[in-house]
Length: 255
Ligand SMILES: NC(=O)c1ccc[n+]([C@@H]2O[C@H](COP(=O)([O-])OP(=O)(O)OC[C@H]3O[C@@H](n4cnc5c(N)ncnc54)[C@H](O)[C@@H]3O)[C@@H](O)[C@H]2O)c1
Image (cartoon, rainbow, N blue to C red; front, side, top):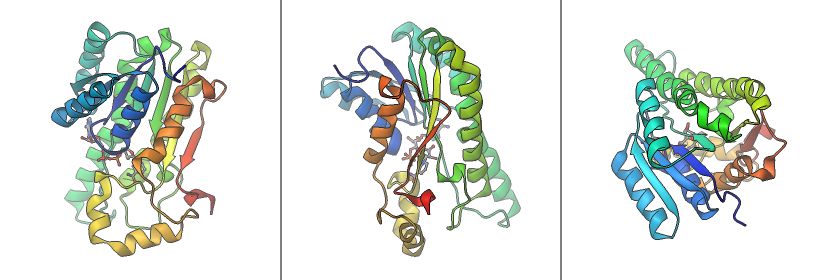
């Protein structure tokens, strides 16, 4: 039997990169996938791709930074799709201004990154809490190696702070929701080749080299490298796992 048969899985930021790969992977394992993204057209396209391959998928536009929009979309999903049992909080952004950069840019980075990466994770989880509790669901939050460290390459303190927050929220929710049978875990990707970092990979080979030199597996990851951990944490394979983070970083954090 497929690993996620009879599950309805919401994936935020599912139009691109890691979220898209997880949505495709969940659909292959039998889940009905609900793709939520700011980029509605691209999310619709991925949902179409899933259906064309014989899977089940719907898509809705969502800005995870808006609590009201999250509540509204959760109602639409309940009415039009059904009871959600898996939530992947994946939508996220990054910018690489140092804290000492131009003050207005630093302030905007902080506000935008926190609004999407951290508040967005809260907003979507809050909106889908009732079906997740009722289904003894699973929540998978996308953290980072920056849930632990500020990496050796230029990066914004806001991103590091947001991903530390995502890990803290993961542990706090695991403690709060464990008695309801809801499991809450995170994934910590290393450098994964997605549109999020396409510009920096194209224009700053030195930065990529610093990263890869510190990665025991000696390569950057692909979005597909995150699918296995995401399936593990959403399925019964991880029935006694909660409050954990699975690092999928080529070993970056191990050395
Ligand atoms: N790529 C990496 O190296 C890497 C490493 C560690 C963690 N991550 C995390 O993985 C997650 C996915 O990143 P990715 O690399 O696939 O990026 P990506 O840019 O390819 O995809 C991100 C998706 O999120 C969507 N999104 C952005 N803001 C949104 C909002 N306000 N509301 C709804 N959707 C929104 C975008 O439209 C896009 O489809 C992020 O949380 C990111 O921080 C990425």
